[in-house]
Length: 366
Image (tube, rainbow, N blue to C red; front, side):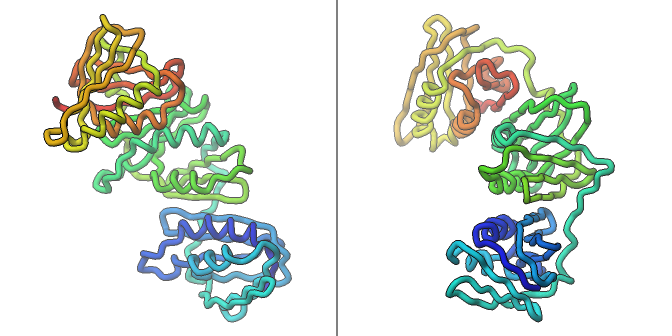
């Protein structure tokens, strides 16, 4: 195999692939990236058997071929080369790299043992074209509430599903829940995408990408990002019927400036570290005041207040301050709406004027 590529394109493709290549696997071949030519195109690919990354870049190919090379070494070496053309020559599974005054040979391995890369079939698939901004917003707003508990694998992903002719994303770890209405659709889908996959897609996004094509099959999902495709297995199983957890009505509701709420929660959380992040929200309708109290037996206690509006009734609830800070980091808009039914019911947080996203936090026993 002989070809020439640019350092800029090659290193970008290698960085995508090397994040997926697994150096903790008992299969040494999975430590490698696959380099394969196809006319004047170079494929740079990797897989850890759960996720696969494939990037195509332009090349001047004088001799076709393929090889696998240790991902980390190749990526680090190419990253440190100057911008410009790089010559790649493969003989006997050894990759020789020449660029300006640099020359190196890396021992590779035959591609025969490299796992077959997943292919996209046009039959029996569901496709969605999602703008970059909508994708980033929807995934960021839901991935934050997914579980990290490997003993409950169904909750370690984001649930992509259709409901009443709309595509929704939802995630829960049992203590909090988030749901985002994404787009209107005529197709139907019920699929759980691992959070690790979605995190990898977010890391792969670049400024030149304006739209993402998401393709679902029965067992896999493909994300097409211009020249890069990320493929992942779906999590097998049925996602819980989370909608029954969303209160239909709320006794206590209020609106508060996001900046004000964020400030008092951050201050309260400083005193809540010893009590598992526990902070108590107290709504005073007559004074239009929200009080947030936190107590630390050794450090002291804190009570902060913020002005609120459109208050329906008094109320008191105890919540985890970390979960509140997480929610505020992904809820957009200047004004937050808070709704709940007493101290034992789920608390709904959303942005005033944006009914497409809700974030629910379960209360703590006070």
